[in-house]
Image (cartoon, rainbow, N blue to C red):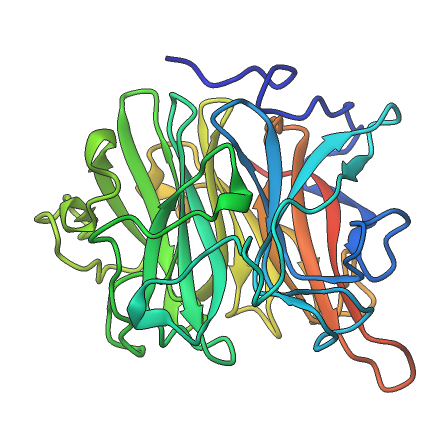
Length: 351
């Protein structure tokens, strides 16, 4: 089993960006406010992750999105799946949404009973070598994951709803105590094992790591935590932090044979979207090499300043010297309109 080529099914054939090591380039908003084309019928959009369907097609899964041009406009999509491709100029292009807003028959993530009445938001994905993708979904109230988390399998028909996998729901434990992850990202390595980076949706915990056999990835009681010296017993909760501080959104993939993590580092100033490339195994992702900041908000005079940024997610088709990610911004300046969008960023990360 092999991963798809960067120019094959299930990947985007990006043109090569000429960037020096450690540099990045923000190509601007591709969905939501300020986007030239955006998504038909949706004017304000949350962060999106591109996932591959079993048939090889790609969809972007966005969180809280709105038909109007600001957060709170009606109707509201707690999550939405949108086909994505590249146009002839190599720009990201979205088709008509495949799923509907709250109250419709085509919501993307029907909740399990413990999460009824909560906002059902995407919280990362796990990609297997055979093309199967699983996502974590979290039930939230004002972005607090009090509805717990569960897993769904990505299918070719998002409009039918990606329903909870039986037995995968877990409750949320408020930090700083380690609890069941409410935000994850992972991949199956060439050796066959699945590695899962994990934290909390509300950004109150550092990144931890789990390993599981691919055949048992949906059985959360089979996940084995990294203890700092070895993999613990199945079902134990990870307590050994890998990151130096708390994190939020995560995207963890193997790119050109190396582990790569993109995530929101909540410990840097007001937060930053940070890219880490590992030289060794997945558990060494934070101890190998320097980080690259793709978005920062602590220095207006420095590169990549984007106020109230968050994210991001690695796009399929990326390489180590041409890493494409989605980052986002939710900014409400006093002297201007609200900004709520997803932006396309190209990075040549340190490694």
